[in-house]
Length: 72
Image (cartoon, rainbow, N blue to C red; front, top):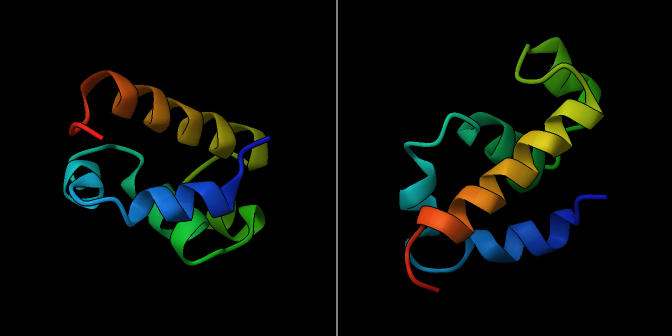
């Protein structure tokens, strides 16, 4: 399961949000992680297909960040 509080803390690391600006999952990250909107609301806004797909997208963001993101 995705740990949203950890992702919120990650958002505070210098350079992370600038890197995320160009990521396709930025809206899911901002609304799901930073704003804490429920998966059903994200689904209604067509940002994801539901919780499972939304969490998968957040996991992919973390994988991409570890691979290509700013030095941590």
